[in-house]
Image (tube, rainbow, N blue to C red; front, side, top):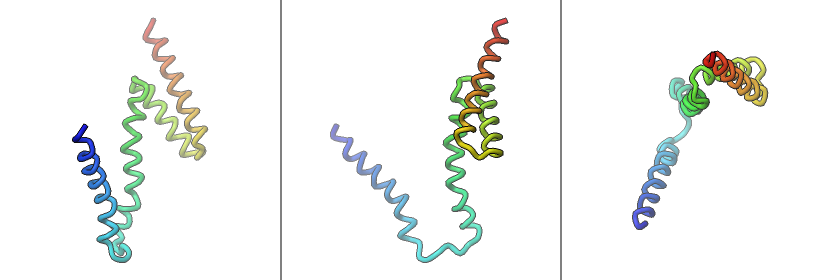
Length: 106
């Protein structure tokens, strides 16, 4: 129990330094076109890195998860509706699971 406050302070300090240090070191705006484009795409890359593994291994079957992910990407691309994308991808994964279990029985 005595080590927890020390670990907590180290964690708080390290995460604060990671977030606050770039702001304190930067003077003015970023002029480099490469740096601007790099900083622009970081949130999308982090989101993809966090969600893609979970989307592929969420059902326990890679085939049904891949079908659900493909349906979600297609529906999101064409309709831009989050609720429709979630509903149709869940339904596609469910139907794929049912078909796989039906054909694996007999």
